[in-house]
Image 1 (cartoon, rainbow, N blue to C red):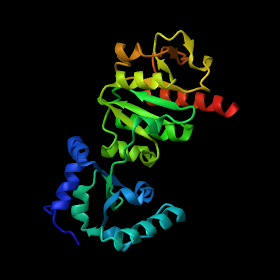
Image 2 (image 1 turned 120 degrees about the horizontal axis):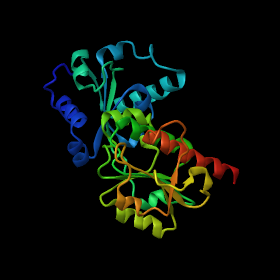
Image 3 (image 1 turned 180 degrees about the vertical axis):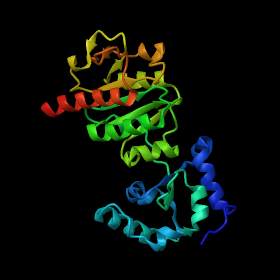
Amino acid sequence: MITSSDNPRMKHIKKLNKKARTRRQEGLFVAEGERILSETPRELLRELYISESYEKSAAVNRAHARMQEKLDELFSWAEEREILQVVSDPVFAEISDTDHPQGVLGVIGQPSYELPDLLGHEPLIMVLEDLQDPGNLGTVFRTAEGAGVSGVIMSKGTVDLFSPKVVRSTMGSIYRMPFVVSEDLKSTLERIKAEGVKLYAAHLEGKRYHDGYNYSGPCGFMIGNEGNGLSSEITAMADELLRIPMGGELESLNAAMAAGILMYEANRQRRKG
């Protein structure tokens, strides 16, 4: 059992939780909680830790039988490879990024993709420029998976996908939704447009409502920063500017909400054929 917060592995976990640069350099991140650990692909799991109290009450508080079965398989797999360790409760509280730790935490290898991975048959792409709220980014990933999106393209100024808060808010979609972090978003958009992807920008200057377009072909939606919207450079890459109808005195919607409306309109149209 690990009983000291000075243990090198514990120090490493705290560093991964706090520093995006470390996560990028090492290609690792920390995932915490029963749900997301139960969905972690085996090939990405590097280390697995459970708290002392969790070990003693292992199967008591799990949400449902399917999750319990998946976690039992994960623990057995990790034990066989000698990557499962028990941590004292006080030390686990130190390495946890949550106020009320569930008692299970993993060090995970970051999944990675190339742009062609996002451009399959009739792709539907989400493009995010400089989103800063972790909850928004996580919600976009979850919604994108549900709506059948092909992949997410993020500017390098977008909040780190592998920060603890974003990871939790994806609810496991981080493992299943292909993504690319673009160093030069304009150039990346030029590449996908060359592949026949038509780009629609959610913008206050949009002339038509979002449900007035046909999204059955290869297309992508562009969502900008929560406070500033899309930059003029990225807006200029759009084939069409659209807007979402709003009543009252509202000028804009939450970024994740707007993204969800657009993704599910495309989903609705594609299901109708």
